[in-house]
Amino acid sequence: MHPLMDAALDSLSRELSDRDQIEYRPRSIVEQMALTIQAATLLQSGDESVADAFCKARLGRENKGWVYGTLPRDIDCAALIRRASPAI
Image (cartoon, rainbow, N blue to C red; front, side):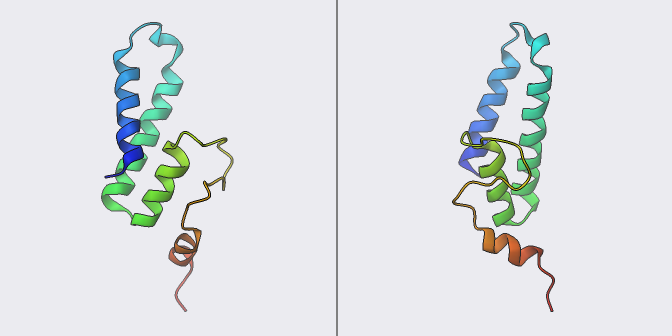
């Protein structure tokens, strides 16, 4: 449903199949699992613009930090703002 989701699933599959010193990687694996599940839920049941923004912001390799509000440049912020704004 999204190219970044495909890449995230491939990466998670590789992490889970690599048993070498897996005891040192549980937090990062669980983080990957949580992000992948969130993305899957949004892609299946959420608003398309929100799902796309989430995938780009959280599954993309160019993410430089997890500070709230850090989004890639190509996110449709106007669509997100319209969706979050109450109808008058």
